[in-house]
Image 1 (cartoon, one colour):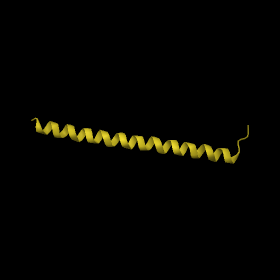
Image 2 (cartoon, rainbow, N blue to C red):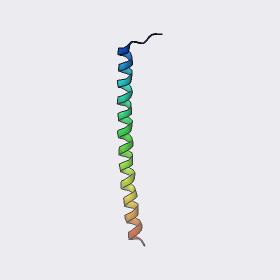
Image 3 (cartoon, rainbow, N blue to C red):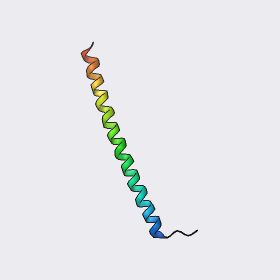
Image 4 (cartoon, one colour):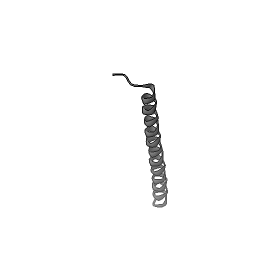
Length: 48
């Protein structure tokens, strides 16, 4: 089965977009977890 270079380029571009979307999702989740972590630290300090 022969795949054209154009099809391969399109496949790579689609995978790059998918990877970028996944990366942005992970970054947003990490930011949210860091906010929660800081809130928990503040809560812990205020209740000692």
